[in-house]
Image (cartoon, rainbow, N blue to C red; front, side):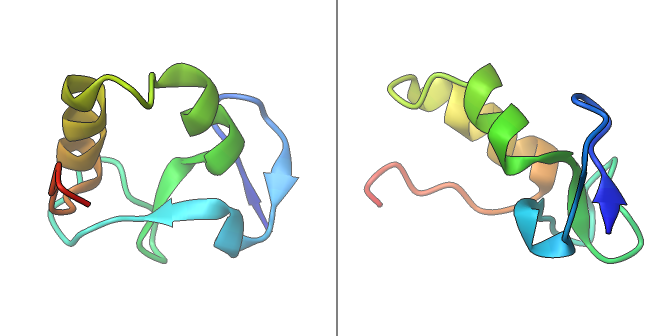
Length: 66
């Protein structure tokens, strides 16, 4: 179990987005410190710039065509 830094709730590791090796704030198991629910609430899925910034934060590739 891991605690989300935004909502302070505990979830299984699968409830956190994976991060790349160069992510600034990844946990020891290579996942984001923010749960998927909190990520979904803080980004606008229609704004590709927001999605790109999230991908940069997580150190994962961004392909706007996918």
